[in-house]
Length: 299
Image 1 (tube, rainbow, N blue to C red):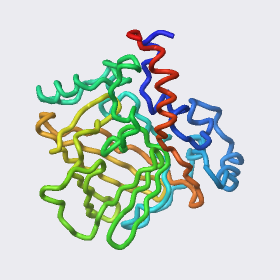
Image 2 (image 1 turned 90 degrees about the vertical axis):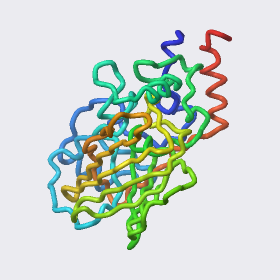
Image 3 (image 1 turned 135 degrees about the vertical axis):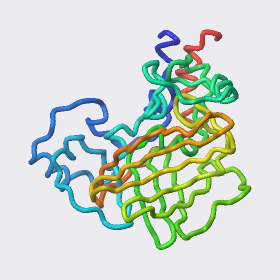
Image 4 (image 1 turned 90 degrees about the horizontal axis):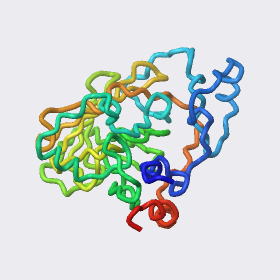
């Protein structure tokens, strides 16, 4: 195997080894024959009740649209089907040599070049990648938004929104009780988040206080401790939720940039069971021994 052939980033190519995945539907491996109306109905009514796989995309095609409930994002959502997996970096700025790059400052570009991703134009052989998640470190925020969305559950209470992310089994708390963001917070992997309703169907979330140990996306884009992230959750109908993510970090980027623009989530059945998708350190160790080290040309 050539070094280039093994230059896959860990959570994508090595996921079969180091992540404990639920069963994956056939839709996640590429285009399939669209389901008939009878098959769609059958899936919706008779899907697996444990470790439920995400459905074929055609399940959503032609679905009757109903009005969205006011000020309510609750439900279990499919973030995978319409582009939630972003292997070459943020969806609006993929690092594939075909699209414009993000607006780096000189310091930001230098920090980016110090990172060694397994994807994108600067991808490196797997043995040389220094992606923090290769050691089972947390994905961090906002990488959980702009890397590998699968199924997500959103739970609302009177004073907060809780987002449960299937990939890496991550949760976030978004406070909606009117509190202000902390002024000098101790760094967290997933930051400190507050939200307010801009209108009856749009929740705007501001997040600060992220540790600079994490990457923004799978292409190795960096950030400082001054990073500020805005998320706009817009629910145009009962069945659809849209997410827009904007990055602001003046030390590393000359202006704010949109990492994902109206990324579409689909509402899943209320009894959809999200299986575990965990990074297991002991399986990671085995992966490094069996895959990374054998293709390292220095060994």
